[in-house]
Length: 185
Image (cartoon, rainbow, N blue to C red):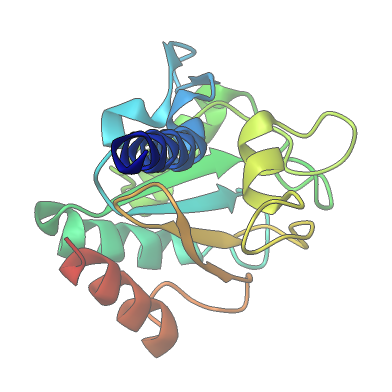
């Protein structure tokens, strides 16, 4: 009887662990397209802290590209990956094609961090990535309110923190959160 109870406990623990891992891994399996239109996912970045940002070229916060690039360059060798997701959901401030967005980012802000295809962060056409980041099961639920909203994801694929547009890439609270995410193993 004791052995059966131990086996049952071990099986339940294994199932719970697999379930937790599957939920964390969900973020990595969502289909995406990179800025060049190639199919991809976040699986490439599994095990690294991620800073996911919805970006726009004609926004009052567009100058944050400079700060995001600085964060990328400062922390990329330690494992942080900054990921930009162009979005036209707020004030139609990202009207360009992906080729135009890529050109704008590289020439105006010398962006070298990964950029992705334009997507919707809210509404009926909300991309599954943002449905996962903002949905009821998220530790930071609720709609993205404007361009340059930021989600910090830990090495384990879990959302660590969420920052609105007014929090700049070089702000003390974002810097502290990034450094804590990098220190976590």
